[in-house]
Length: 364
Image 1 (cartoon, one colour):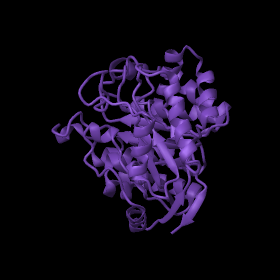
Image 2: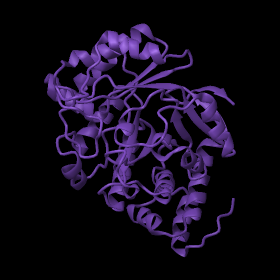
Image 3: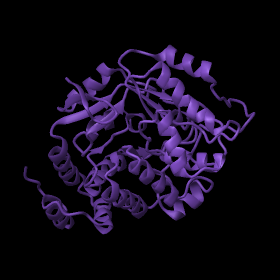
């Protein structure tokens, strides 16, 4: 496929991409600054097609947030509550099982679990959450607890992160979600999430998980105070760990959501920024198989567009997403399998239902 270059600054980058050479942070800055978004899209689409052909993946999954009580004070979060605050909750076993039963269908293959850093319950609570789900729904993969939560558990239980992960795996943990990464630079974390896992701790949690045999996920929360260079530093730190472990399955750029439903639209990321970030992620993260377009944050139509900007995955049904919506996401909280298939086919792509580890369940 030929690519017409309108911005000659991109010619050297095109040559690198065609030859399979790794792009530098400086290359990434050129991509962010270039007015030629369609050429960037073409390059990203070519890379994605080389890796995934015409396939676009999705999963039938359920999102579970067992507790929203949290010690952290991340400035972007609308989900957390302090102990005793109105709206604070912590599911016991009965409430957890009822939550799942009320939303269950027999096609669900994955539980996606993220919660608050709750000091009001012991570490065993988090282990028991996994044990309970594995006991009652052994057919489902448990994707639970971010790298930041792993670091919190270690502090809370006076254990090492390796010991925490070993205990979670013994309880039935199958993979870590990618959250808690936000932006992996010191300046960002000092301002936005100062009492949460550091850069090194988040990366270490995933490195240990990879060493213990888990394949995991990685995210980037963009669209607030970070500079474009910081996004690229974030991507570079992820691909360096991927070079070492090959343990990441997918990268998920997450567009920042306003703190409330009444916040002005100026606080949302633009369509151009969303699509450009998907494409640049595909070009920078040469050692990742998949870039995910997260429809919860960027909406159905931009998700569909992203499938020609380098994305090969649109996440899943979710059933009831809470965290992004508590911050002001305007999308629905779930999509059906038929809706996901329609979205993918509308982009001229082939819908592939997968399990957590990208094993094919069915091609539509």
